[in-house]
Length: 474
Ligand SMILES: Cc1cc2nc3c(=O)[nH]c(=O)nc-3n(C[C@H](O)[C@H](O)[C@H](O)COP(=O)(O)OP(=O)(O)OC[C@H]3O[C@@H](n4cnc5c(N)ncnc54)[C@H](O)[C@@H]3O)c2cc1C
Image (cartoon, helix red, strand yellow):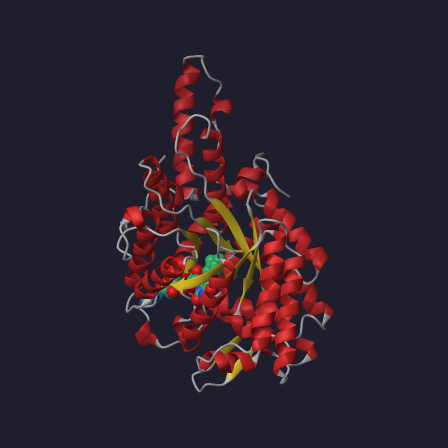
């Protein structure tokens, strides 16, 4: 089976192939298997029972509780009525100042929200819970996790700042809290894992400096150095999230400065995020590549489509979803092959790349291209892949499965390259994480159709377990 058909709908076409093991596909597959088995039975060669094997989808590595939650929450998000009700409840919980509606303070609400919603999408509220989540993800076969400290600030259209979590009006205190939160996050990840950070988490003072495109306050630079030094010591990597456009020019500039200090000797510690939905994304990438090459450090890029379409300057964002898709896929192609970005493939600078997203077509394209360029000795960068915890599990598990399959072929085939797959988790109090979750649901709302495919895969896996197939992870 080609990779195109492994990951979802056929690349570049509207034709829906029997790819994600939907119930319908599984049923027809069973019929074919049974028919074949019956013929053989009449020949007295193969017993029919042995012939009925439901193919594993990759989801066999997901704990049963996650499958059940995927199904329950999937039904909620794919029904317009339930979605509206769910969003109203969630937004009430996320934004209420009343102790009654705060799941961290109200034990009855906690008993409902924590196992049903929080545990599906977030890492944990303390070190013990986070370690447990991290271990489960590693047992599932992922190479590691990206752990994010959830505090952030959003700028409203009137320029007001809306913060998640507790805040303080003292800039030094805010920066210290942000530094300590990130250092604590690093304490909870292992070698090879990542720290995900948002610069606005450093408080209103820093956010105002970002908005005015000023230089970072000295305390901020010192805090960033302390975080990077610790990550380096632990052999972890760091990515800096992209945020709203009013902040992004300074986020890019400040992050380039950190990359200058830490992405040396041909290795990158710090990744900057490029949002492919921006009309300027390609120009931005070309400029950053040129600066890195000129100054002799390594550019590391996390590529995303972009999360702020609902509350950002719309004219800066591609006009249609298709344009954003073309931009994302085009940038992936050009980074992997070293083309169209201001350098010849022979002189393409060293880069590192993380492909973040839930779009199966984009993952399939990237995966195919990595293997074909590698076969021709033309691959410029081996990307990492990653999804958010609790989202697109069927895609993440499939990437893991493909990586394991390739591992098995390594000794037989030359030029086999094996990407790594990660899960991105956020930690914090239940109410803080509800605010994070609200944003994620809004930005992924367009993926309802895809969620239906995902639900079909989860149903098929549940059925497989009920009828005797074993889970790999519990
Ligand atoms: C691990 C990880 C890290 C992330 N980090 C960041 C980050 O640092 N910063 C950030 O901004 N986002 C981040 N995101 C979110 C990301 O940008 C997307 O919003 C989200 O992943 C959904 O997009 P998708 O690529 O999965 O695919 P899809 O669901 O196929 O694409 C949805 C996206 O397409 C774009 N889009 C939708 N409709 C239109 C339209 N009419 N016109 C133009 N474009 C449109 C939007 O970007 C939308 O989010 C991250 C996502 C992941 C998985």
